[in-house]
Picture (cartoon, rainbow, N blue to C red):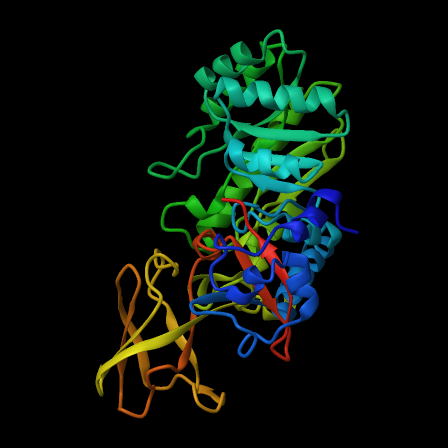
Amino acid sequence: MASDAVQRLADEPVDHRFKGLPPDAQAAGLTVGELAAQGRDLYTGGFTTPVLTLDADALEHNLAVLGEYSARHGLAFAPHGKTCMAPQLFERQLAHGAWGITAAVPHQARVYRAFGIPRIFLANELVDPAALRWVAAELAADPGFRFVCYVDSVRGVQLMDRALQGHGAVLDVVVELGAGEGARTGARTDEDCRAVADAVAATATLRLVGIAGYEAEVPDADPEKVHVWLRRLTGLAAEFDKAGRFGPEVEEIVVSAGGSAWFDAVADVFAELPELSRPMLKLLRSGAYVSHDHGWYGRLTPFNRVPEEGGLRPAFRLWTQVVSRPSPTQAFVNAGKRDIAYDLGLPEAELVRDALDGTERPATGIRVVKLSDQHAWLETGSAEDVQVGDWVALGMSHPCTIFEKWPLIPVVEADGKVTEYVRTFF
């Protein structure tokens, strides 16, 4: 059952803020919910190009697969919400068994709370005083709210403690273990981790509840190196527990890792954890799975290594239109850097839909070779490959930068009907 806040998204007017939606829907004064109820056909219902779509069947498949994978391996799941920033999808992730939603920055956590997310794991050290005071107020206002964040430095602990003093909150924190020299954030050595834990213990505003990190940052990551680092992470958790670093009021010890490229390694190593002095929350944080993609994560997904465990389907498709065909080997469609994710590679042409008869065919011989702000440059094999007016569907890499460019995304059923719209908040 959708929350009141999510239900209210259906009351938004269909207007100029939302790319690709039918202009006549705005003229008729329709809300998003009213437009969804009409079940318009994507191709004949007045949608304009470019328009990004989500495949309804692929979306549901992906949500189910990771929910089932996590449960099968005894993992709690807090998918990274930065990927989609879509409360409707957060609710579906929770319905598929997610423990909570991961965030990277305070703005994301504020969006989550606006839509009633009960548990947030912030995978960053939080040292902004205003944001810390906001978290303290949320915790005080809602005893059922759970918030956990990283700490990775003694100075960070000191800043957090200073900001929280006098606000009546005790903030749960996990020490972040860095993935190695030259990697991203996190305490670099085991001794650094111990020093951060000692600093937490010296405060009355922070409570150490576990250890966490991000294995994809392991330099030159391969299965062996990732497994070695993960065992270092779990070894620290066991060491901290044996040394009594988790206070008696800590009901469960959090051990967290797992992006979208190595969750099989996380499952392997977390399964090896010995019993600790109290229950463990083995928390996986993969986020890109929800839509998957046509390139980067298609190559990196652990399901390529363990196909017997399942598989993900690319759910995104960007429909563009040919607006110029200046030569037999060159064509231009009306979407570019403002609409297309390109940080992990150029998009791939997937399908062509004929402008005259609506037939679809594979985009054989068509290749995206360059992007301008509002155009993609296509290289074609022959004059017959594509014509002015044809729709060309592009597949893209990197869900995080696909979602962020589209504030309202039609969800398309197998028969081409659009019965839902996913709202994003970046």
